[in-house]
Length: 386
Image (cartoon, rainbow, N blue to C red; front, side, top):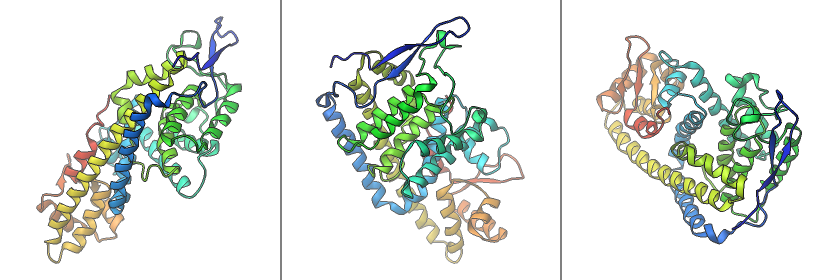
């Protein structure tokens, strides 16, 4: 459909002798309305992919609650990598096990803060708190206050101008709205979150784009914008569990992602953006569903091995259940998580090693770390640093 630019430029004051223009997006929904017929088939296929993922989550409810731990961390790693961190999922797990030798701690702290922010958002939503500007600011505060962005007003909308690309607003690739417009724009976006006459997938796509265009914070906008997709779909109960790590799709299609965002701002081509977004949701949902099925089967096979141990099976099973949650563990962690005596924990790990389930991956004689390698391999793939 032919549309005009979905916003307008506003001349701003001179900065360092330069005049620049900020971009102020029109409120949602788009006008004229989106041509849903152009994306109807894509929307149908993507919705079916989400339904199939939800079915697997429902059938495997116990396993899914266990897997949440790892999936949240995978999304945190991928989303942070888009912003330039070099930490991998393996780095994060070692850091959480206090085995940080050789790891860039500053980077992994960024990822750890993302995990805390996402967990906070999910808990608030599951407790009935609405997805709102207040919650978005709470999440942002957690994301930034213990990371490199701690000096960029965590939890507060910006009161100064930011920009994307370039060294200053005058040569930037994109300059978001001026700070005095941010609250009004975000308030309008908050109201749009509660529309119930549009598919949640369409709302999620539109909200993500609008949020990135407003860029309401001095730092962390990309991570918060991606995080909002899963939080919104979970709040609407459209997604049963946050296994939709869209950051992987955006990471693999990074340049195209930015081009699609720009396309809407330049000529109002929402249909292109929606098609791209829905393609990402479909691909991610299908991958998550396949991975969940494979992991469930792996757990069943290895549970059967543990059940054949005889008397040691009870404590070995308790230890194995912890490896299902976090596939890299030290003896200290196992003792803390299970309440077992240290000697019993060591003995149980030896049994799991004997069964070929767990491996000792330590590089030093002290601080031994053990891995449920077959499980870790399924999740660590695709999380190599950019």
